[in-house]
Length: 123
Image (cartoon, rainbow, N blue to C red; front, side, top):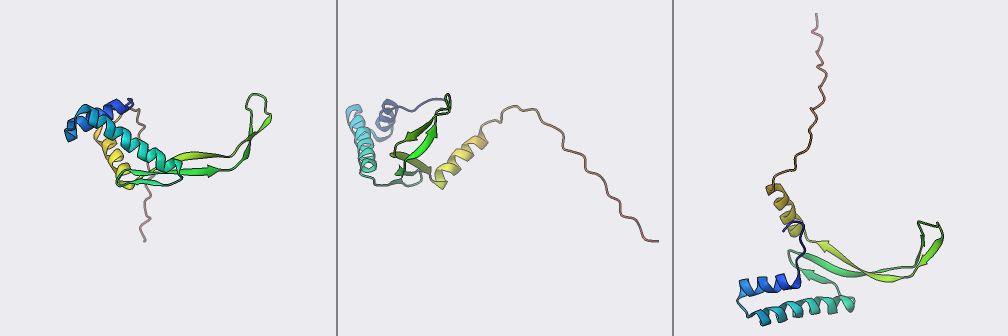
């Protein structure tokens, strides 16, 4: 599904197909999982999903930014940001998936020629 976005409806349909729950039960399950993850993050807890990754909320302090158009300094207020760190298993799965897709056509340059070094023979 390169270039596409996975939606709640698609997740619900996948649960329906794989687990065999009704569509309504599948939708409730997906919503329940999303609500639980969001609630934990809102409380400042870290969410770790084995072989997938971890979600955490990080506190960023106040800093000074600059308006790129005018160059005027503008204070950026402190805020909480969501960070996601992919697990090694997910990174490996993604990279192996890339290896199986055909590479894009790119122009290749020949390797630079190496200078042959001949050893002087003694005598």
